[in-house]
Image (spheres, rainbow, N blue to C red):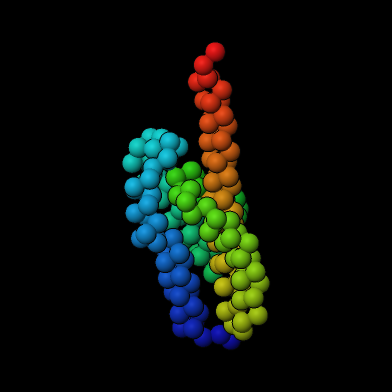
Amino acid sequence: MEKTEDIHIYVLLSIFCCAAWKFDSAALQRLRSQPSMIRNLGGEKMQKIGGIASTLAILLAIVAGVVNIPGLDVALVILVLAIIAGIWADQDNAVRMFLAVLVLPVVAAALASIPAVGGYLSAIFGNVAIAAAGVSASLIARRIYEMVMGTITGLTSGNS
């Protein structure tokens, strides 16, 4: 039987790692200094909703990795929250997010082999990978939208 103290330590370390990954101060400064058209949609209140959705997605990923939540499709809820968060995510860090989508499932699989806590850590990182995929999907959709709108604007602003 595992010691519950060890499990709590690993859960707290996972929370700390996820929080450090999310709240990068340099990224937040770039977000404030380089707003895009979509991110400004709705103003600061909508940006706060994106931040809240992101925080809820990560917290749910951690909680669902440790505790089974019956009657809730956790992956779907995390994905929807992450898509909402991705609408206001920083486009400059898109490559980092795409890399996280590739790396997090590998890390989750590697952590699964740790005795006593591997299953929990694997589930947490797997859930965070779902969140990263949702944010990435929003970033890709935003980029496609900006490309299409730029093309349409270029076509309509020509002199004839």
